[in-house]
Length: 240
Image (cartoon, rainbow, N blue to C red; front, side, top):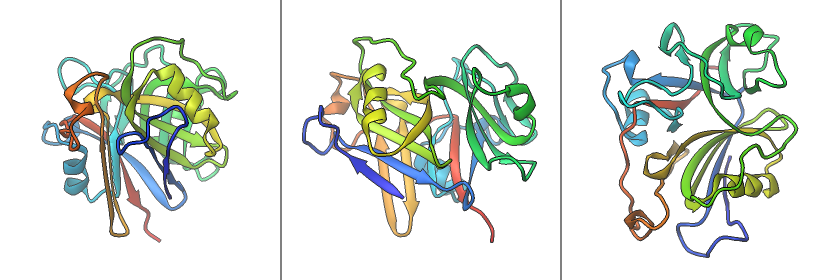
């Protein structure tokens, strides 16, 4: 299900809406695609979708100066892009190995035992926590604003791919998410600025969303440039 929301604090123009794709993990699987597991080439979210037949694509977190290694831990099946867990508190997992576990979830390291869970999934991505398991905003207020793409989970266990083209401070955008009628449980930061992308192609509907920083030409450009990125999170329909 795709939702478009207009936060009350936003201006009413084509660039304001928050786009949210809600995914049922029982019907769709979320997989990680690092460039280091393939040809090593960066691609736009649309190109990643076309290359792997994906229904939706977002950034798989931020990456380091080598333009390929994730800032946090990232594993796709047997391929490890980054083997180091840093201090960030949110970890997304999918592709369960045990049928008693959730198909996909966001682990909060303060509330859940990461060590007992992380090896039970095929896909693991670590990034920065935005909303903790008590539905609290974990970011301090700051003046800087930018577009962003976020990974969330609602209280029913659906996974949320969230994109805001409008620049917000992260703290304020978290408050917006907590106020929206999406029943959000927790969330983690994926990327910000012009690299923040969301691509959806499903049921004859195609949506492309790209970001920018505040006070840049991206804000005035009706067709912002899609940025190539090395690692993505993609959605595929499960076999019946």
